[in-house]
Image: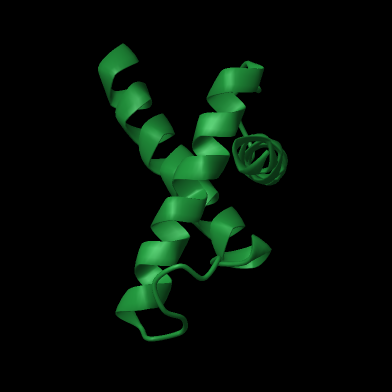
Length: 84
């Protein structure tokens, strides 16, 4: 059950990040979910570094969204250089 909740929240965060970051086309369900889960992981790492929460605590929607936007921006930057 926990895995399904993580996938659902990851998909929601990834979808919001793709909608907020202009340019590009939305990905598949799997790609969007991976971006959202990766953003949550990045957000939790940043939050632990700054002491905002401790191991085992969730990073929250806003920081997960910021992490997902950062991942998308970096991915698009490298993708643009490779295509051009």
